Length: 120
Image 1 (cartoon, rainbow, N blue to C red):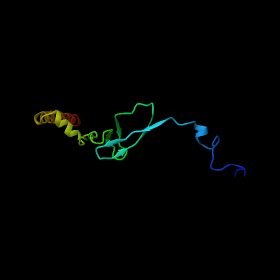
Image 2: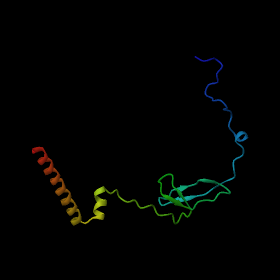
Image 3: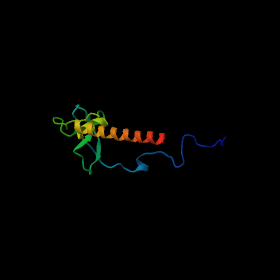
């Protein structure tokens, strides 16, 4: 075991943390932000810092603005698209059929060549 004079629950250099050790905190200002779900958020900023126009609502994640009567619109979420959906956006049905026919023709030719090589 260890010696009986160890200080438990502490680390080297640990001490009372307070204003005396950390110094005085910067002057702060609290600014209200409002999201489309009527949530109010009050983050604090250093008084000399630039306050942003928008802030993310911690409750719903929507953007929040400073005007409670006209909060920013929530972002539009696009539905998940499969690989096939993206392909269909770029190709017409006839293009797809032509590519499929070409690939099947090549596959059949390759298989015929393998069979011929195995026979002879």
